[in-house]
Length: 358
Image (cartoon, rainbow, N blue to C red):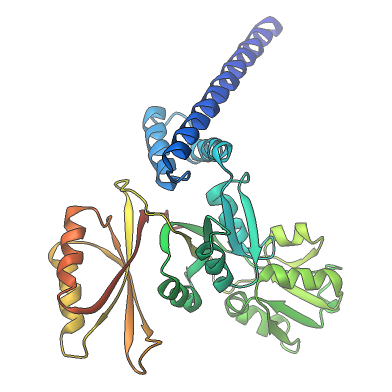
């Protein structure tokens, strides 16, 4: 038995050696691709490539290795190879340990260069000025709905949506001591406060609650003021050396937030895409119906439609729309062309690989 065990372990060691050699070769190939792209003046980052590679790997796997495990392994391999060409600079709503930071790490891997900024609009500024290649911004929450600041900024800055990722959101109350009675004031992001309103009213009805620009900033305040409690992530508690007073205090379980990846690049079709648009219609009966009929007639599934007041004209509205498919798909392209007949304005925000809702 011992002999057999030793032989199997020696065989595993040989497999590990082979894996390392193949990973080194993959890295070399990625570096060669990076040099070719640089020589041709091409964009170094192809975010749609990861989805294509993972789809192929899952097909080759034939279900032997658990899919989630294989996705995680290959995502990190791809991102490490991408970083060997050029580390992507990624702006996010900071400071470190916000849910935007967590989403950015999950999407780009830990090898990217992350740039924390103070507001969502600052994320757009960093990308627009090319101080960052990409930005990660929240677009909607499963409980509280759309993030209006993001919708307004994507319209104003003219950047492209390059991808999306869904993150599970769990809120935790934390402070320096871990004792509920030590909390005299609670800080957090307005969305987090709204998502924990019932719990706060029941458990701490007399404690004032104040909004700050991010959950992580609330944790930073709690780290220097023992009277402050913060509603933030477990990563924030770890990073800022805080004690958990209460876990999972959100009022509704299954809370998740969808984040957009924004940039200046256009994503090629992958076969599993989503397209985002902005449009406005004339103030006449049936105008919106005619636009939506363009999608219905072609059986294009709408995954979201949201109206926002126009910044340019009082009591006028613009519509944000997500649909399945890529703008270069013939049926989507045809729909986009026809809907312009009924619209005052149509703006294509981007087509990008669909994320997986939680």
